Image 1 (cartoon, rainbow, N blue to C red):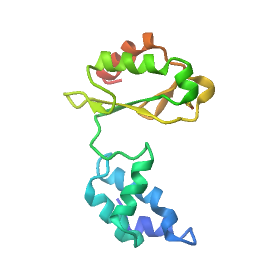
Image 2: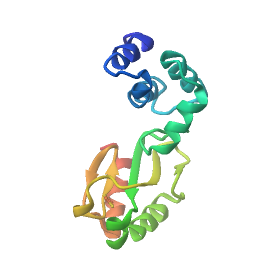
Image 3: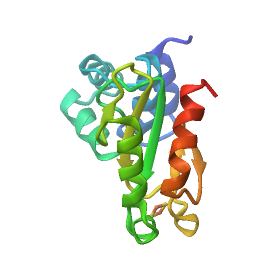
Image 4: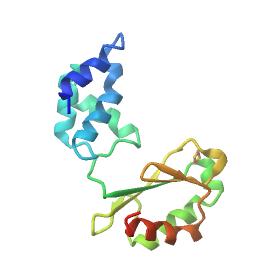
Length: 156
Ligand code: FES
C-alpha cells in the first residue's frame, strides 16, 4: 500500500485549500485502520493536511460513513429519515434489534454484525432502505429481516 501521506498529498493537490481533502483522507485512514477511525487516525490526517486532530474528528462525527468505534464483520444500516420513516423504517429497526438481540449502534457479541440507524441513504423513492455491507436493499419490510440476518450469519 502506498504511503498514507503521499496518497493524501496527491488528493490535497487537487484543491486550492488542502482542508478540502479531509473527507477522502479520513476515508483512506479508515481503510488503513481496519474500518474505523481510532484517535491516532485523526492525528495522521491532521498532520498530513496541517489541521488539528480535533478538527478532523469533528468532521468525522458529522458523517455516517465514518466509524468512531470498531465495527463487526458485517454492517447493517437502516435509514430512518422521513421517507423511510413513513414507510415503517422503525418497524424494520425493531425487527433487526429483536433478531440480533442488540440495540442500534451495537455489535453482536460474536463480532459478526454491527447494526446502526443512519441518515438518508439517497434512495428515498425506494423506502425503507437498508444498506447491508454498503449494498442497498429496498424496500425492506420487517418480515425480510430474519432472512437478511440468516444470510449474513451463513457468510453470504
Ligand atoms: S429517507 Fe431513507 S433513503 Fe432517503
